[in-house]
Image (cartoon, rainbow, N blue to C red; front, side, top):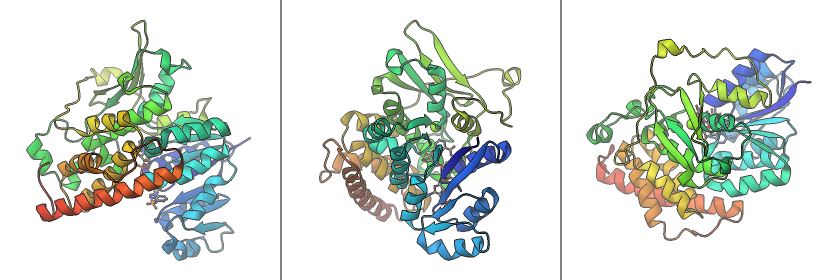
Length: 399
Ligand code: NDP
Ligand code: MG
């Protein structure tokens, strides 16, 4: 029987990679229940005409006309607005890909987790902001969370069913991003084009900037702590520019198990898509002799303070990871729009964590508390962005 799939964030980098695998496997293997996007209505309609989901949802209601025109005469059911995305997420499906970028992915991912079934989780912000709540809902509904982020998928594979709390540590690899060897002066003057030019991975704009600041790895440390029930001291980060080893598990006897593969998201996505089985992909195979050597180095905390900020926010707990994530989203958006400089991103996050006096820092007992902290942190970070943009008159320098 074909596995039924819903893809939240179908038009994005992860969503399209998922549909690439689905298209290659054919309709006997997978049937699409729902596809969603934010505003790229034409692209979404093209995907729907090809994959014929039971329901298509566009979050931005202003795009309803475009979607309606593009799907006219197709007989496909569709909806517009955030509620339509929630409806898509709540429809019965065996497997859901949660690949909406940012905190916007929280509510739809929660719907999928509450419904049960398999939830392939690419949206790392969901676990960063509300890890305990997601894990608790998954326990209640019986949902199986399958990590899609390449490092976490690697750890999941390298654990081979061993309880992560019984290992000595896990190690997440980081490519180091486009500024791995850059001086602080070069980083201060970095343009958007420099920052999104990832040396290895091809990804959406937001996560590409996160890789350049290494906030991506900070978010991933938090993600790993939730997924594998680990304390942050047991989650190490190592820079590995070739991005061939995606994650390692160090056992108590000194043995290290590494998961390797080409830096192509289709491999971890395929692992989650077929889980607990395996499926063929057209991903290029590793040519070890051609590769010759793999290199590793420690991350530089001076040039990449985001990593330390993320660890500190997770250790402080409560709303701190929500503030970290929201301030980062606001600052990255401001950077992408030319309002602040590259080094301002981590500085705005640090400022928001230090100065978020009005934001409740206690334990987040429900999603309303998460959304409230997220909204307050966005306001706060927005004010810091405006102050820096005024001081820097456009691209601000320094941090
Ligand atoms: P993209 O920016 O390429 O795609 C994001 C998707 O989410 C698009 O379909 C977009 O729709 C949709 N979307 C954006 N905002 C909203 C909203 N407010 N409501 C509903 N839908 C929305 O992102 P990526 O595919 O790169 O990343 C997706 C997630 O996966 C992120 O959380 C990222 O951190 C994570 N991830 C990504 C990896 C990668 O290799 N790309 C690797 C590991 C994790 P539209 O196209 O219409 O804007
Ligand atoms: Mg990753």
